[in-house]
Length: 181
Image (cartoon, rainbow, N blue to C red; front, top):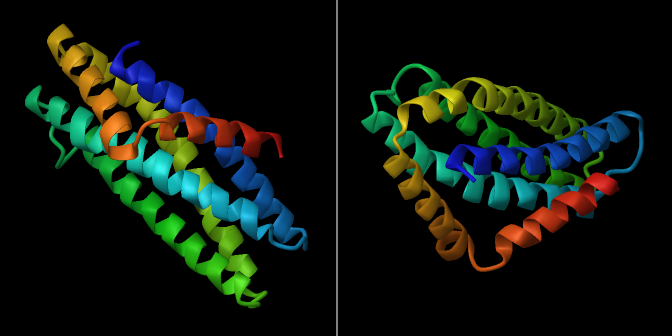
């Protein structure tokens, strides 16, 4: 599997949880009680898997490799992806803060929570589309076979050393469980 194929596969896992986040937001807007535990699990997934693992591979491995091949991180597709990663982090922080307020009995915070979930879902779906259909095909064109091999090794190192043994797999299982709920 090439590095971009690995990232596309991770996108599919992330999309599973985005679907659940969207359903939770709709449920909140429909007047249902906030499922605090489920949303806390989703936020942990987004922080650890989507950001700590997936975005780490992109930001610390793929994007610098693309920069060496002439794709600036200051302008163009890579710059857009980096900005969207920051926007996503802001939504996750906002959702976590709103969830904490809901946990303290502030029922009005549920609307803010739903808004951050919806904003995050919308942002990431568009972001994933751009990466899968624009950035990754460009990356596959400019990266050499040696670059691809180096990235594959670096991606494995992120999973093993930075995230921890078995954590990647555990988050795949969590995504599938959340998607079914």
